[in-house]
Length: 223
Image (cartoon, rainbow, N blue to C red; front, side, top):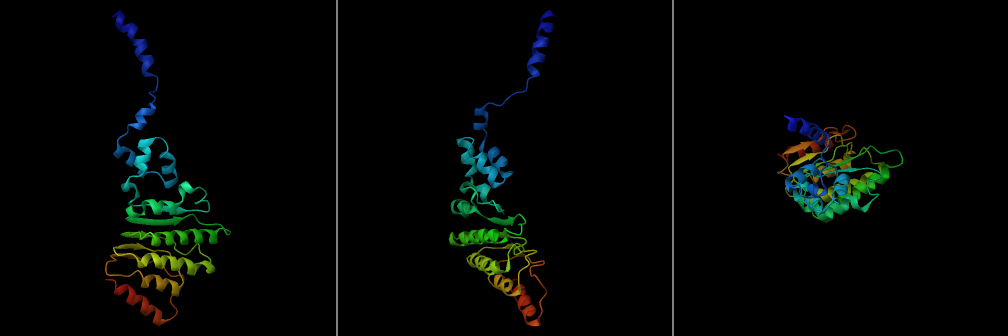
């Protein structure tokens, strides 16, 4: 009875202290657990986590983490080479399967900058011959000023031309002009495309029946 009473305060005291994980415990996390952790992080946070230790750096290189990348551009996107999406394409582009390109809504002085960054990124994808099964870029042209639209469309076309297994495409709310928009679709629509989202793809309604028929023909020929 006496021993139980003397042990009580000691046990209570020790249990009240939070257990602090040792550094080597983080080093020994299994690969699947690290990959799971990394899957919830954006690219910037993944890069920071990759310098924690060697095993975390190895997890960062895992192909499964690069199958469905989401690139979110902003005016500060390329402030550090470590987070440069073009560098990521060169190193991990061969793992891409589902690619999403997004961006923060730009201010009045950053439209041209973002358009240039995204155009360069698309050019890099084409140069590296990156093949994807799913491509999503909502609000394709909202950020682009008139002077930059042709450049962005040309880069998009270059990327689409090299695709051989693309089955899912989402250009919803693209807001493109008629001529460049049709040019994009001409290089996109293939027999393999199964899912094509084009809601509000064009900036305005077609003014002529000829262009409407052209678009209808493009879409129907894809099935």
